[in-house]
Length: 363
Length: 261
Image (cartoon, rainbow over all chains, first blue to last red; front, side):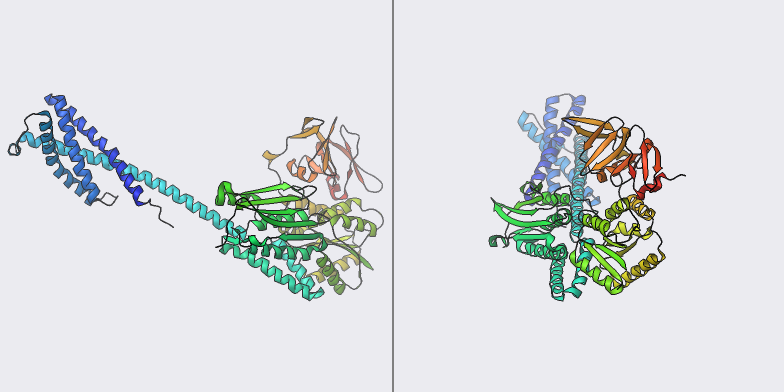
């Protein structure tokens, strides 16, 4: 199965989006801590500015380190250790830088480096460290949720692909099916002809082989050419012609320019078989089947016209073959709106089945 | 001399069956070969053969329908013919034949298998055992049992019949009988009649089989409306219905429904 991870530029965009959503989180934490400190010391605005600046620096260090160092999406001991190290590093640096920048901006005195090793300063650094840790934990949590969502989406996509493949396999199986009634009746005719007219029996056997080859090889290819499809239908109608005698007349009309036009396998055949089984075969006087094709705009139009019983007139029969509904679903899946299949009464009596497909040629 | 009729729509198969039969049974006279079910019925009634070989899938009427119609229309001194059904591949039909009193052969027909059928036919014709329509009713019953039927929830409750430019709603329980006329069905209640464009064959699976029973090819009656069944001198059974003056005839195939307990 092909990889379903998105291309590089999409990955970059996703990362940027993540930074943009995680950044306000760290600002929020900083603001929260500032409020907390202000409760103890007063001077709210000053604390807020300091805290936010510290937050920005800490976020930049931790997040930058995370993006640079941690490539795996999974969080194990190693990843946690790296984060802890980043937080330990970030706390004093962020604290000092933040405080110093705030001092410059507000014009207030800030403690020099020499003044740092005091209980007051260290406790503030520990405070920063705790804030940074909180930020890491929250970011990690968000990441885990995001990851779970992605996994779910991926699983859904995969399930869809599997379902589609199963459907295709099932379809292929259906396609390769030859109606047993047709096969046994044809064999019975062959058996008879061997005694009555060996030369005709040989011809009929040739046609049966061609029909079987065309029908059974379907499972190995997804598309075919009109030329091949018309040859297979010629063989099928030839078989039916021997069986039904004068009751069946047929005509195949393929313009030379369309010989190499491509179409999916097993779309034309069910229509022709329906024309026989539901149209001409159950009609006492039989009838005529015409298969023709033409170009309309950038579409290929295939017509199967029969002068048989007409829609809904033939007795229902069990099983066998590919139904019209299945063919329609397949067309929809392959081409969407660009293809269609219609079944209409063809006065005075009979049915016109029309298949419209995007016109494509063999290279 | 024994006379036979073959009903088969595929000319080569008809010729082959005739040829094989003549090889196995020189005393057999094949009086006609019918290309479809409708012709088969007419020729069988005209020629009164002793044996019928009926293809099941034929245009016009199936082999089973031919047998059913013949059972209904067969009259006179000639005994009802022996029937052998011929089929290529009809899973469920074959299943029914396994249990039926009828012989059947599968296409392509093997000479050895047909030989056995010929032997059986000769034995039965010599013994002159009458083939009762019961055997046919049994077979049809089995085929009907195997055919798909509508689940109770999907049964028809109301018949919608067009009368002029109105559509009349007729509760199915009010229907006394359904009568097939060509492609139409006449829906008859105690006080009205209306034509619907649904073939009887399609209607039948949608009805409650306990209440509505087929009594001939063209008639389905509401068993609750049958007051009596009378057998005349010729052995034909007629029904008397509550609320209707008509007396529908019961096909011999379905006569067992109206026998005393």
